[in-house]
Length: 304
Picture: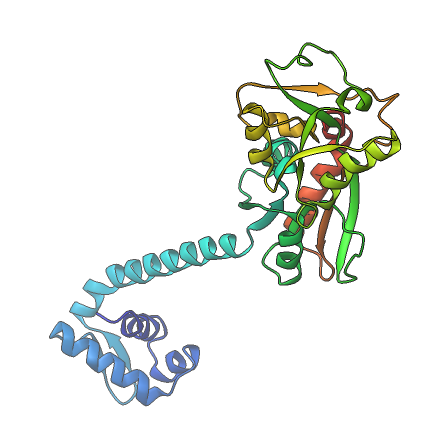
């Protein structure tokens, strides 16, 4: 059964005039008549009584009228629902974040955002800044939480959020694990695990600059790329590591995170976190989640 043929039948049944029904459906009367004949052939009965002046429903046409209308209405509702689902998927917010933001900021932000917009779809991607920024530029992401680069592409908008707090990851059985705070000079002879500078320049430079400002040279035991790997290496007693405090949310046993002595640690503003997006038309969903972020930024920053 062809739904278009049913629509043609319903239009003629309502108008009782082929010309008006054809005009309503934006088609030629001859084409309309052909669809009606095909439907009658399929049913094996005459649905419309035609004369040169009048059109009327036959008994069988009257009998199927309500069911035909119901079928078309259900088909229209199904199409509407499917299109609505597609529209929602197409307007899902595609959100990227570096690892520590994914562990700390994003869960808090999504919790608050969903209390305002429980219907909003958010697709998440965790990656490094050097991989998230190209995704923003290509339109594959709508918003990303990144370390702002030294050279910023003018096609991207950056909004500084706050600086993450640095802590020292120490094995729980290490001689320094019982300390409440650690100074950089205390770490002078300790083997350290540092991030690869090519992929994580901010985290790498944090360790280097803290030691340089203390007039010391760090003892590099291992270079690793991923925060999870770095913390795992600390757990394995390969060395200590200076990491963002949100790295403590990574599920690794045998590691304690000790704050740095702020008075003796030099500059601790080297772990900036920024929101970034592609310049251009406003995205309503992105604007809404940014409004949630702005409203709660002070609370988020206090936990960073």
